[in-house]
Image (cartoon, rainbow, N blue to C red; front, top):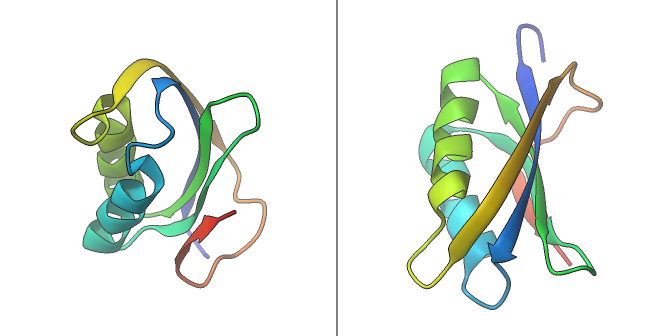
Amino acid sequence: MKDASEALVVVSGRVQGVFFRASTRDAAARWGVRGFVRNLPDGRVEAVLQGDRSAVERVVAFMREGPPGAYVEAADVKWRVPSEEFDGFFVRR
């Protein structure tokens, strides 16, 4: 995990029921980013993204737009020191 960057991303808007988590997982796999994405009870989607800073930034940029059918009203991004090490990228339920 040396030199890894981590971002906590919370997006709001029409982001549940539009394949947002699966699309985020696919984007993370495309750019080699580790972590997870999950729905929150309040209708938002949360992700922890870990990896090379430029790769994490690409996934953040994807999440700001979302997949077709989604409408991202806001994306809150917090950069932080990695909290734990992830082995892959997962959709959490």
